[in-house]
Length: 573
Image (tube, rainbow, N blue to C red; front, side, top):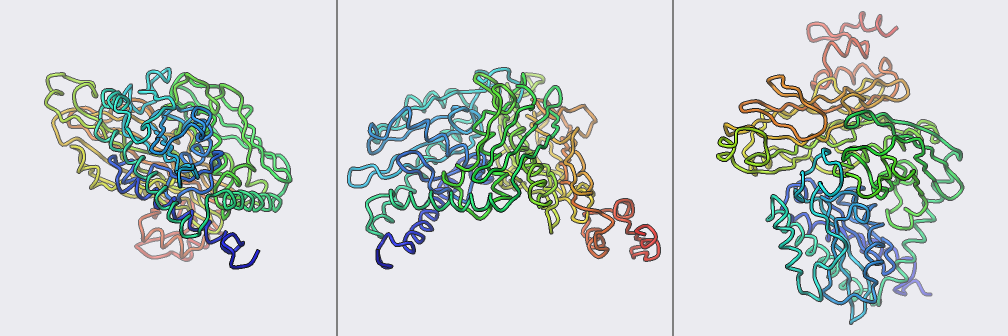
C-alpha cells in the first residue's frame, strides 16, 4: 500500500482525528439546542459514533464519563432489541432504562443509524440528563424504581422519519417540565443527525464506503496502547476501601484491583449490600466510573473507545450497592457511583509508586430546587400563589491534591460537568443566590493543598416555602488526604434559621428562610510543614487559607500582615 493510499497509516490517523471532530460537533449541537440547564449549561451529556457491531469508535470530549462509558455498553442492548438489518433510514431509537442505558431514569439515550447509498454504515448515540421524569423527582426517597418516574423501554422514537407522537404525549403527561424534557429529546435527535451528516461528508471526502477498516484500526491501536500502559505499572493485587455517608446508614465500597499482563480486573466483593433507598448503582454505571478512574492514571492519553475500555473488567456481587438489580431504586446512583475513581486511585496509589491524587469531594453538590403547589410541604392556600418551578443547578466541592500540583477548587471531578452560573439559575426560577464563594480552609493541608469547596446561600424571592432534593455526600466522611496530607473539610447543609437538614432526601425550607450549603474540600497530599512558605503566604493573600490555619497546619506564622520568620522557623523545626 502506497503512502498516498486513502487507507495508509497516515491517512488512517487523519481520518481518526476527523472522526473525533465529527462526534465533538455532534455533542456541541446537543448543547447548543438543549432546553434544560443540565444540558446547555452544565454539559451533562455524551455523544459518540459506533460501528455496526455496537463498538464505540470515538466519543466527544464534551460529556461525562458516566454517560459516555455506560452508553458504550448500552448500544449493544439496542442492537439486541433492534438488529441493524431491521433498521431503516429515518429510524430513531430511545430508552431511559437504568440497566440498559446509563444508570437512572433521568438519562435518555437516543440511537440513530446512518445510511449511505441505502446501506447502513454507522450508529450515532447520545445521552442527556433531563430535568424531570415525573415520579418522586430526583431524590433518594423512593423504595423501588417504579416510584422514580417514567420508565421507557428500548423502542422507536421515530419510524422511517415519522416521530412517535404517542410516546411524546406520554412523556408530556408524566413530567413536570414537558417543554424542557421533550425539547431535550429533540435535541438528542438533532445531535445524532449532525453527526451523521458530518460522517457522510467525511466518507465522501476520503472516498471510502464505510468505517470497517478505520474502525478496526482505531480499536486495535487503542487496545494495544492501553495494554502497553498496563505493562508499565507494577502487577499484583491491591485493595482499598472507602466509607460513605449513605442514606440511613454508612456504606462501604471495597475494591480489589488485580493488574495482569494485558488487563486490569476490579472486584467489588465486600462492598455494602443494596440500600433500601435510591443510592444504588446499576453495574453499567459502576463499570463506567471504575474504568474512568483507571484510565486517568494508567493510560490517560489513549483515546477512549471500545478498544481501550476492553482491557478493564469490573465485577460486583449481585445486589451489592454497586450491582443493584431491577427493581431497586437508583435515582441518585451518582451519589455513590461518582466516588469510584477515588477507590480506584486508592488501589493505584499502591501500584504506581504514589502517583495518585488525594480523595476529593467527588460527589456533585447540585442544588435541585423546586417550588409551587404539590412540590413543597406547606399551606396549600399560600402555595397556590407561588410560582411553580423545578431547577437543577450544578455545583461542586474541591478536588484532591495531585502529585506535583494543588487540587482544583470548586471543580466537578470525576463528572466533568460545569458549574451553572448564578445568573442562569436566577433567570429561570424565582430564587436569589446571596453568596457563592470559596470556602476558606476547606482544602486539606499538605505539601500540595487540596482544592477548596464553595459556600452558597439561596432563598426564594416569593413569600412561600421552597424545597430541596438533597443528594450530598462527604458530610460524615470527608475526603481523605494522602501520603501525610490532611483531610478536606466535610460538607455541611443547613438553613439560616438553624432548622435541621439531611444530606439526602426531599426537604422543605420555610418561608423567609435561606438554604446554606458548604461544600467539601479535597484532601491534601504530603507533609503540610514542607509546603513552601511563599505558597502558604500566597494562599493567605488569596483568602484560600486563614492566618490561623496557616499557623496550625503549615507552621507559617503571620502577624500584623507580615511573616514572623522566627516563629515560623520554630514551628517548622
